[in-house]
Length: 123
Image (cartoon, rainbow, N blue to C red; front, side):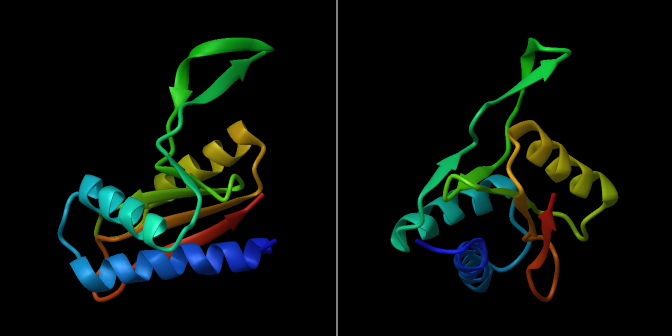
């Protein structure tokens, strides 16, 4: 069984490979698909764009959160393709973590040059 540190290391390794192969400048959906391929190649278990339930005052909402990935059943990975990460991107990942009661998330930006930008967030 891998530790969270090993899991995030493996996830970031896949992200770095996608960036090395593709570079920056593509739409987020392209990186999403490439990362799915890379996760499969590395036998990293993931769910792509799961619909996460939200509740307000105990009532299930019709609206859902849809993160890009839940990896290893315990790490949320949210990808971006922007020139630099903004505070609202970090807030989005924190909301996903709160909604799922998961503790670790990775915010990965493939639009940054000259290398992939990432932020590891822990609740």
